[in-house]
Image (tube, rainbow, N blue to C red; front, side, top):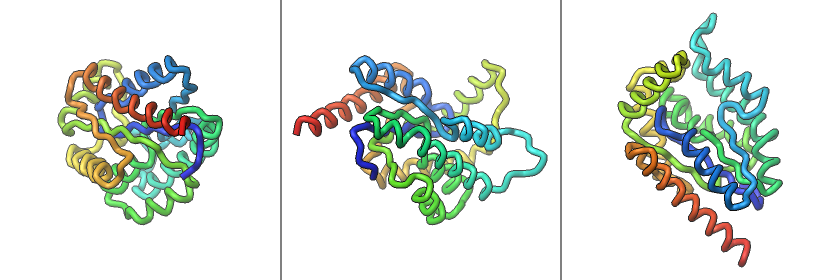
Length: 222
């Protein structure tokens, strides 16, 4: 793992679990403590990576996108994002808050699409170069609840459903199982009940982040 005075916190979960809203709440809290914060997202986060994002999520292509193409584009965007945004921010001592990272790729392309987890790990090593999250907040909710929220939001905002959001419910069930498997495997995960009202979810999230702040403070003092 990259040795740095900064902190890298990722927010994971299926569709409609409130990642974006809670990232903003955490950013405001950290900034109130005098911490420099970078808020970003995947796929995307840089001009090049955002162009890749548009191709990845575009609902209508002239030809079908293969699962392997999808995977490689995810890591192409990630490599650029890590080199241009995440690593420099961490080296400056900033706290990076990222809406999705490699755990989403494992859950969506690995568990959801059924692609090789070994291949994903190899691509991860190449793209990240030792950059790993210090803390991952998994906002978890049953698929029916999350997808219901996501689709209602899209209707309210008159947004077109993207290529991945248009997948069948069975796909998202596999994705959720993938996230929960990762949460059992890695101690950096904290699982947040995203079925609760938004205020309660945010309260849970901020409590976890407060613990991370305290850990960081103790490291500095020791």
